[in-house]
Image 1: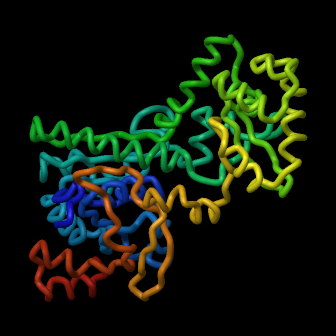
Image 2: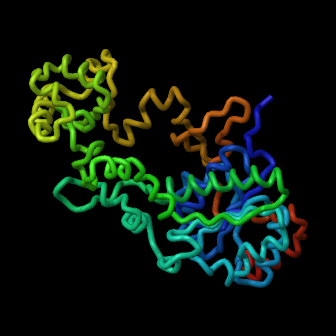
Image 3: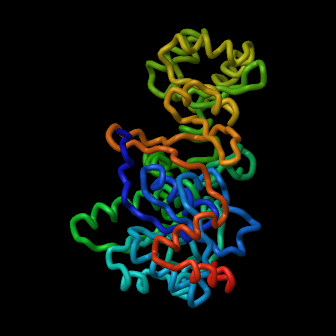
Length: 383
């Protein structure tokens, strides 16, 4: 008998767009929740962004600005456990889908708002994207070359780790509380709030040393040879994390680092000389040669993989983190698996992303709208 996910029986309405909210609800969907994504049909030409986070979900169209659209939505809310929205503060209230309105219709509803700067505070009304939240929170100042400008990372830290994952965590906390109280609650997730604690180690190091961590010149960011990246002969890179002395000494012994340098692991003034030795050494062999060699040592190292290399890596295939799915048209493609491994209630990929509005009729029939009603909604462009 197939095991069901931990959130089987939980219904989620997702009226967010872009990345943070959909990533949050993908986590819930992967673990068994029924997620119904609701979008205005005017977004159909844009499509759902990005498709990879819309697996395991249903999708319906609905015009929340219309009276009939709100009536449909309220009926759906009556049967829901969770609602996720990603509007700027005040928009949900203007649409009549804010928490104060919906809790009257469903006191057990858990309502999660994900925004850039939160529902309160001086920046609540400012629009923003991932790069803006990274900048405000201090994360972007720590990313980039030592003597250059801050570098925008090639993936969305604030959207995913800030909004998406913290949103899912807040929802699970609220679900647990509801088992004791029977009441839902409002969750205010600001992506900038969630980024700030990511600098916990930087904060502790600044208190310890009295110095502000500098971009690509800090204790754990290129400032020292033992925690760094190095180029190999074939133009690829590998990582070293020889933080503990026994890892460092093992590595130095193997590479033949001169004793007068290997004993100065934490000497800031000598790091240029130590890093130069490491750079010259690692450029003498291709990365695959270093892989065979370093794998024999009990040290912390790894390759800097491209996306393609990561998706082909046995590390992830062995952990079922790269899986193959079949789209409705029969195309087979690889995607990422479910990272949270649970023995009794495992997550799963049950369906690939559905088409825009594909689930609309089925969902309306479930909440007892007649075929005539549904045809009228289409005619009036409510759905």
